[in-house]
Amino acid sequence: MQPTSDSLHLGNYVGALVNWVKLQDEFDAYYFVADLHALTVPTDPSVLRHRSRVTAAQFIAGGVDPTQSAVFLQSHVTEHAELGWVMNCLTAEGEARRMTQFKDKVGKGHNANVGLLTYPMLMAADILMYDAAYVPVGEDQRQHLEITRDLAERFNTRYAADTLVVPEPYIVKESAKIMDLTDPTSKMSGSTSPDKGLVLLSDEDARIAKKIKSAVTDTEAEVRFDPEHKAGISNLLVIHSTLSGTSIPDLEARFAGQGYGAFKGEVADVVVDTIAPFRARMAELLADPAELDRLVGLGAQRARVVARSTMARVRSAVGLVPALGQDG
Image 1 (cartoon, rainbow, N blue to C red):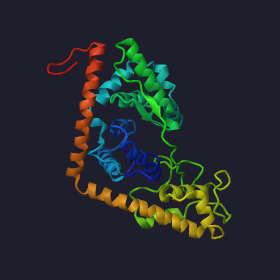
Image 2: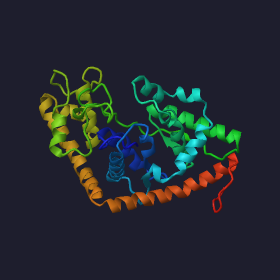
Image 3: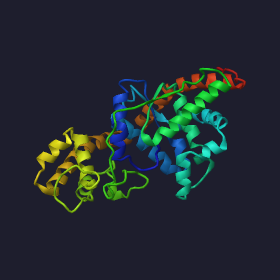
Image 4: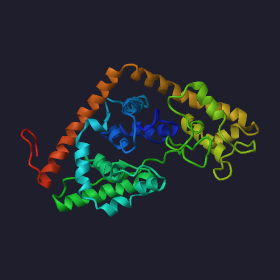
């Protein structure tokens, strides 16, 4: 996840962090802050450093155990950039330009630097570095996994069979999609949603409550799940149900005839109860930067062991002369 904002938001928590916590009990998990990817967008260096630490702290505050999973900064494992270069050299220019993300961002007037063009190759390196047999993917990431598989197979065919593990998609139980509070037809997004449309994981209780109570809804007063005609209320039902564990039909029955005010008030309470302990743990981590850096450093050490092994195979396969004291 890129450190491109001052805080993750509720959509990140529900869509990513909750699943990451579950997956760490089943797999050797590597979760990193994608600070190299963040360089595709001009950012003040001090801001990038701050946001990178905040994002790492929020991973841990969200339940990722740094003693069980590797939590680290992408730039701390320099093999990512090296393998990314090898992937660049396997990719045709036209293939890179056809990637959906590049076309979309250029079409919207974003800074079309070479880093943005080769972003998917570095993302492929991020995956292939850790011999991942399975990769959890959402619909918006499917194309990136496809090119990752293509590049791994291309490398193995051109150089040495079985050098890189070709990953399979891991379809996690579909996560709830949290929508923008001001435009419930659009996904909650740190890059496109206005502040009023986002519930940030750093927001104070009163601010969270105000945003939820001000969420855009329809002119009716019936609490009913109908994403097509009642997108705002449906979004709030999803938020409540996901965080509280109460089914949407039960919520509809409980708030029948009560109107939106009582319902929004309870949704606000549920969100506050979820985020308050998260925010407290995040503040504790950020108040002790030395300890946070130690935890992130331990994650990088663990990741580096696997990365060095992978790159030794890759260097040997492509014909690079090993440096003295360097395997492969």
